[in-house]
Length: 178
Ligand code: PHB
Image 1: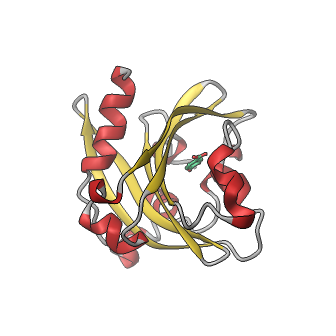
Image 2 (image 1 turned 90 degrees about the vertical axis):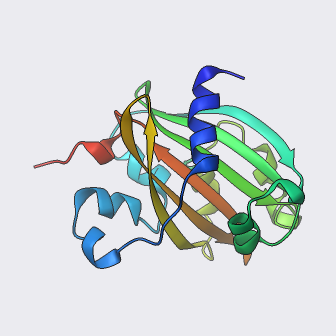
């Protein structure tokens, strides 16, 4: 496993997720990013010419290996794990780990296991009934820097998946404008 993956994905797995203080966070620049209910992919795209996805990993995780909170949010089920890095104009901006229960990867959603370099948000938010809930936030310390992260549940055709996202140091969430 690469050092990058070991460090960043492991930090997401071990994060201490907390319910956000909406009133305090919502009016702030970073809060506005963290609480985004629509597509993070779209939001990042607005800050670069080219957004690219590199798949770091795609594997299965047995239900016994899920954390208690993951089980509570998704159900007690074997999941597919998708791990990616998103880059804006070749600068790494976001590292994400998504858990997709096998019962979500059925019928129209089978293709979610085979997205490759297509961003998840691009696939999910193309669908009219997509929605996001259960947004939580965390601060993760990596190489001495405190980075922002969030976890949220996405629904597509009433089937869930759980997306954890870590904003890397050069991400636009840290570059307040104006
Ligand atoms: C993904 O393609 O897996 C992906 C893309 C953007 C995100 C999270 C996950 O914000």
